[in-house]
Length: 278
Image (cartoon, rainbow, N blue to C red; front, side):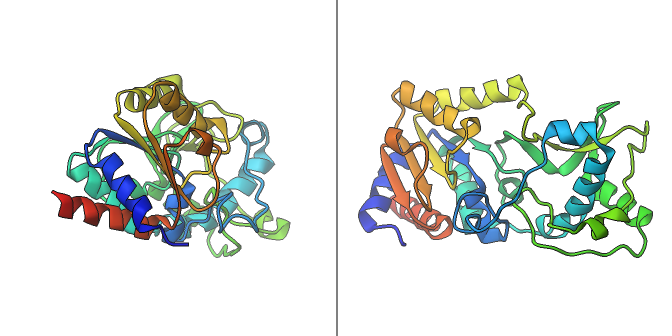
């Protein structure tokens, strides 16, 4: 489905005055080859995401996670921003945005050139030691995992969290490495299911939304409270809300405007119309 001329025109009216907060979800990154959970690319998937409790409580769970993530990183780590990310970065460059809150962990907003990005759920491009709390680049961990697993090769369908579906036999021979500094358990610097987003980060996101003139939701089904709470807050404050997503969302009832449309073409059209209107 393509957006109607009227809908995009209404979106231009909403964004043109500026001070717009963006809330982005997995649907914005599907055109970069990263699957989502609930959109068109995710409906046929039955991925069971890793929980924080399983990860910290089981060496076997950590082996499975890192084996699968090591394979999945080949796709996530090489993904490139798509037209939607570039359009959002362009809106920021023109001074129209109050800030970007993203539920995504792929770093593609920043790769497209966006500067004020709050990663609500963290980023897969770094890892954290659960003992000494040191954060290190994911690229360094990947190098160490290759050295620890010479000759190990596996492939499988990539899941939305950046890991791959592997068999027990594929996972069994994989060796996990610990923190290079203290030997502690390494975890991707992302918020797992069952883990809380740090309160200061949540407060920063609320501040961006609360200080905005409008909220623009991009590619999020708003099916979980993590993202929906910001829409609920905007609605309570009387802030206009526009949602661009493929499929219905949990925030549609509070929205001023909804577009069921592809993100890349819609946002490219929005940026072009705003430029011509200047």
